[in-house]
Structure formats: structure tokens, C-alpha cells
Amino acid sequence: MSLPFTNQVAIVTGAGIGIGFEIARELALQGAAVVLNDIDESVAESAAAAIVESGGICSAIAGDAADTVFIEQMVTTTVQKYGKLSLLVANAGITLFDDFFNYQPAALQKVMNLNLSGSFFLAQAAAKQMKVQASGGSILFMSSVTGHQAHQHLAAYGMTKAGLEMLARSLVIELSPHQININAIAPGATETERTSEDPEYHATWSRITPMGRPAKVSDISNAALFLLSPASKHITGQTIVVDGGWTCVSPSPY
Image (cartoon, rainbow, N blue to C red; front, side):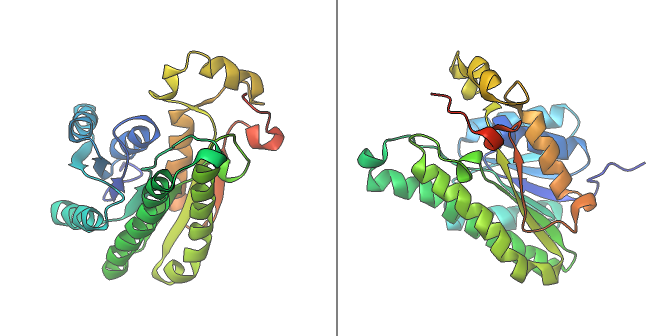
């Protein structure tokens, strides 16, 4: 019996740790050949090696997912190595906290370049390849609950995440004729290597999340794999919020 993603080839950006790594790992363990991207070469190599050791097919490619030249190289390298590109998860992103009154142009440009522009041109490059292949494909953006509800000091970040959801809706018009579906996931508070640095994180988000705990990376990857699977091919232009109900009530963590 074949695995769900057998004969599929995926790119997952920002996948050295956290949500991106778990999505890449699960795709590989369920049969896909995965190209794992991270801006840090040693992190990318270590993550890919861990997936291979677990029995998956995975190779690392280090580079800046905001750089259009690198984006083109990544897609080309993927196709040269595995013969095609079936799935894309534009997960790479950056969060720069600051008060709106103090936010600086350089910080805004950095957030916009990776979160929004990088995702736009990565989706463009992947969709061009999928169009040439004429066998369809799936694209997934990583949004955030901050694209739905205000969050202190995250106006710029939230703006880019809301933009990604609108981008997914807009691209339905151009991608659907090529049997490419495109969706987004908006994670809420999620326990990762980064959030574990805050000793109060689990307790705070367990208290204010209706389901009684923050998400695990597996909660997000489960939703991602569903949206990338054949089971969801008639779902496109949509965003699934995975936040344990937080956006329904939206209590502040502060």
C-alpha cells in the first residue's frame, strides 16, 4: 500500500525548526520527496539529515526565501533533483515586534520582503513549474491569527499575514484552470523551540485558549497535510485557523 504522498515532490521554506520542520518531516514520512529550506545552512542540513535518518527522502537547500534569485534557483534545483514540483509550503516568515509609533522603515521592509513579497514570488515560481507540468499541484501559505485579530506590537506582521490570505483568494482565479489549489493556515499560539524560551508561554496560552492549551506543531502539520492532500483538491482560496478557539474569544495574553 502506497503512502499518501508517494511520487509527490515538495518544497517547504523556513523548515529548519518548528512548524516548518514538522510539516517537512510529515510529508517525507508519508512518501513525498522534500526540499527543506532554511536561511541557516547548518540548521537546514541538520534538519534534513534528521528526516532522512527517520526514513524520509529529504534534501536541504539554504538561502533567503525573500530573494527572488534564490527562489528561482530553489525551484530549478528541486526539479533537477526530483523531476518535478507538486507541493509548495511557503512557511518562511519573520516577526519583528515594536510599538506602532516607533516602527522603523527598515523593519517594515524586512517583514514585508520575506512574509509577503517572498511568498508571492515563491508561489509564482512554483505555479509556473506546475503549469508547465500540466498535472496540477497544491500551494500553502502560512498566515497567522494576527491576520484576523489585533495583537499588541504586531501591526506590521499581522498586515502581511492578512495579505497572504487575500493573495490565496485572489490566485484562485489564475491557478484553478491549471488544477492548482491554493490555501492558507493561520496558526495561533504554538509551542516551538522559539516559544519555549518564554517560561510563561505554556501557562499563559493554556489559560486563555478555549481548548486549554497552545497548539503543538503536529496540530499545524495535520492541517497542512490535509490541505496538501488529494482529499482537499476542491478546497481552494481558503484559510483554516488552527488556534484552539482563541480568535473566537480573543483574550489578550498581556
